[in-house]
Image 1 (tube, helix red, strand yellow):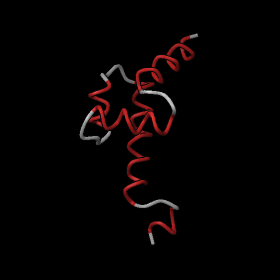
Image 2 (cartoon, helix red, strand yellow):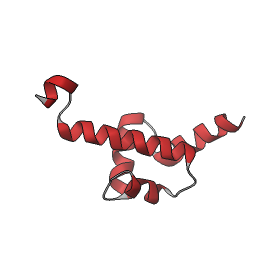
Image 3 (cartoon, helix red, strand yellow):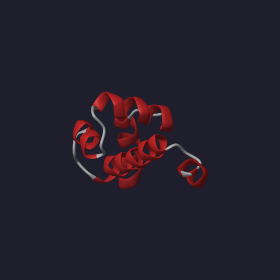
Length: 73
């Protein structure tokens, strides 16, 4: 039922929610990427980095740097 309602498995849905939380934190917070990974529900920095890179095409550090520059300009 969950998949028919959301188009995703519960695991994938939760993963996407966590990645979105991490994305917002990367732009808004001055926390380290490890702190963001843990606050977003990931067990490790490496796991979040791998999934974030797969989804966005950029590692979290590059995403943060490229978007913080455009936000301050």
